[in-house]
Length: 165
Image (cartoon, rainbow, N blue to C red; front, side):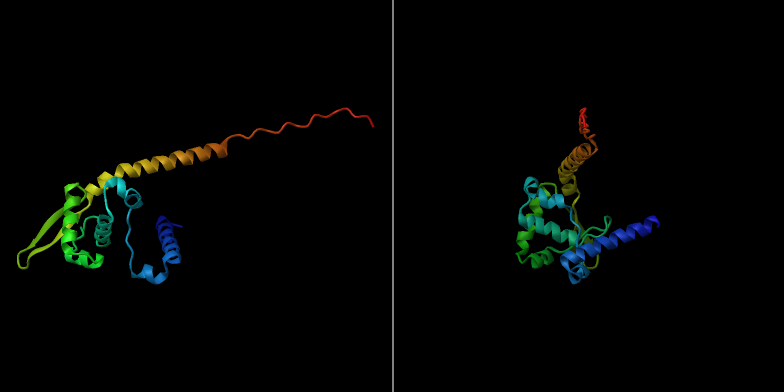
């Protein structure tokens, strides 16, 4: 089996696992990858539920690293069922924290376009939390391996006594 075949098999296995959890129609309709650390450490990062939902919305438009997401604030607001001004305020606050950077897009014929968003700041600020989790998992794995590989004490052989028959 080649490396590509193994990789494709693993991806297929993961998809099937996710289909078992979420159902085939839901997975076929589309899915978004998001690092768990953002969910697990949202409080430590100072992100409220609306911030997380906006990040999820941006992530759902971001499939390639070099092609930045650029949904309109109106579209994000419609998806979240909130006012566009709420989206603007939250994006501005996350930009002030250094999590998001807005890149203005302008079209000569159509004028101002929806902003592109980079999440580099969020990635940078979440990375130390991810490294902590990775280190903790490694420590636990090492401790488990030590327990497993620890030589077991041999039970003492029973002492034979001279019994007369």
